[in-house]
Length: 391
Image (cartoon, rainbow, N blue to C red):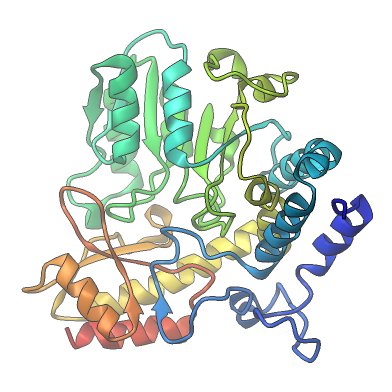
């Protein structure tokens, strides 16, 4: 029993988006990327809970689930033969799908997560001058910089996230001065603040490295606004769990230190070698195509609309203090808040009892956190607000 043929692969990829939901029955309506209910139906999340935490670790839409299973069957049937016959072709499909969606040349390196990408980038980057990060970056950025440089400067972009502004963050970023490297985070997972990446990058001469994990597929910033983008793809994109990528404007400044199996282009030479979870990596093509069919700008507006509905509702509740700014220009799909007389873990637990799945921000200052991904809708938002009212 051999691996799947190219014809079968392409036929499976084309069929992956045909039927909505997870049942695959032919009497179900065809998937329509123009219809938000049809888009939501592509996710196989349990219906007994409203999932506002599914951005933490992706739930896969139907085309991605089917692609993973298709490649798994091929690898199980003939692992060496399947890799030999399809690896280069399938890697290329992922690169082309990512480039088509992100509107840049197909010059990416693969990783397993944002943390792996940040470690590889900061571990091998060449800079002139000192490194600077912000106080709002995730542990993985700060620790990667510490491991490489021992010491680095930190700047604060805002004091109260609820009142963060574009102009204020741009002005605060000027404190980076003559830094050789500026580490930024597109959307802060601890507050929900979205920074003005493009304007900050234009205001500095430093190499700008962006942790884009909570902006990828949640915002439509042109990624070539920065020098290096690092992002896991298993969050808002709904990409296969355990996948990520790195994009660089110039690979000359990134020194590889893990041997590659496929030297060639600069990105390929930087790409860590070894055997990987290929069935997940190759299903990245379907994840990017899923979002491309809907449209980056449409997805951004959808997530912002749901987040605004949620924030406006929270702002009216007497027992809640909204942490994420209301303005869409400085926020995306993450909404953080505090509940009077309840610590965040207890609030999250009680929301779960009311069939609302939330999360706690993994920072020194914890907040209750909800995410308005494509797997929730207006009814879910209203149900969450009703549950929060009763806390």
